[in-house]
Image (cartoon, rainbow, N blue to C red; front, side, top):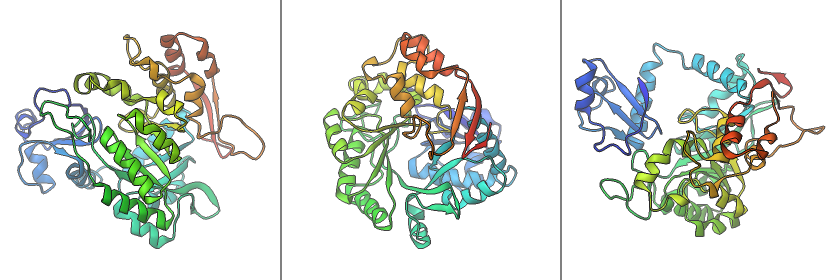
Length: 391
């Protein structure tokens, strides 16, 4: 099992025969760097019960195949051991809370994870559409505790992946792009998305809607309005600037992952070069009065808030200059968007504290490259969640 290829800018897309030629009959399953595409050889296809095919999986077809791969690997590897390592690494970076969009019933799994000796962590555990009625049957609403007498683990939103990704040429856009000159595709139409979000609102769940392309972004806003829903637009990668007042009026939050602009910079210039000024438009979102929260989208990008802040401030991960610097955030804005709105300590506030080896705000007076390097180099001396030391 491998991970990380990015085929958006390849002259030809992945083919099973090419993987067969170098794998010697051993089952090989590769996940793309953005998680929206899977490339399997013939032996792996047979192992998960799939029929022969020429190319890679994408979107829902890949997500279903991925679950079967997970079931097979779980027979020899304990996923919970990997979780413990990930929790320790997150605490070492100063992470005190996450929103978990794990496939399956994450909201059922986290109570046991927290009670079984793992380091404490604040978790908002989401559900997908296939688990919506289970959440309804349990009588859970967004914000409800999943463990009695413990506010660490709460019910999160309904997550919907409304379109694909740039990396797999499936992001749904108004204008065509890519070698085939296509628009990408929506995973649901407006009626279907609105109905799903309406059902979530009826049972007390907010919504978190993945929208990468500008057509998906516009439809997502219409669905929020039609459903009378609250929540977040996840990614908001390619936006229509004229739609931002609409988003602000709906009271929605933009949940963005700055490291994606590092990963997607070259592919964007190649495939969306005529619209790249509207990609990861953090400044435009903030200036429109839309609340921003910075995240990682781990494991698609590193679970490292300092690297994310550096990307938001400088918009470059290498020696090149900043990419569309007019869309940069200030250091103060990036830090505030990384702390769930809590930027001070006061009596009565949750004792979620991070002790660092330098003052992040000092980066504000530095040129962009130095500010980014300073933020990436922040060292975490100690992390506390609800007063308990996790690092």
